[in-house]
Amino acid sequence: MPLSRSGQRPTGKHADTYDDPNAVVGTKVRLPSASFGHIADAVATSLQHSLIRLRRDRVDIFHLHNAITEAGGGETLSVQQVLGEVVPAFLRLRQQGKIRFLGLTAIGRTTALYRVIDAGTFDSAQVAYNMLNPSAGTELPPNYPAQDYGRLFQHTRKAGVGATKILFRFAVAVLHRGVEIVHTDANGTRDGSLLIERIAAHHQPADRTAAEAQHGKL
Image (tube, rainbow, N blue to C red):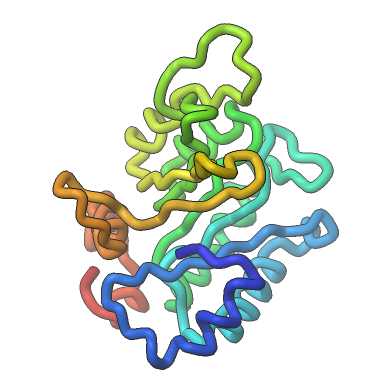
């Protein structure tokens, strides 16, 4: 359940009574361009503020929410900024036991997303995939009026990145965007814990941090 900043307070207020073992709690950081000169500090500060609002010591998934382009510019991050600055900052937070998995919202230039996902450093990616734009999973017809994500799911699969879907709900497709984060198995059972298992299956025990091990086996 990735939460917006406005959505964190209610969850945090009831966090002490919310004891669902299948809950997967996530939050995100969108870095403003003014912070691009000190990305590591901005990432750490954003997460700390989220943890305070959520009344938690850690979250399961921490998502980067900036659009990514090849060279950056404006409010977008470049591939180099993501791999060279954001990822090391996320890894330090994981070593500190504050996050379990590195997440990415796959928005921006498709070629840049290929490079970031193919690097294999992120555990999870939220990918736009819906009836209006299914290009992350299939080829679009010529001149289709939407961004072509170029079968991005092929890249997430190859890199071992657990992919979830950014859905445009049918009744209010243009006005409201929701994120599906729970996994549905072959029997139709919706279970957040299966998402964690799906991500963790791609990581050998040797890759897990000591801080992660202290919180119990995945």
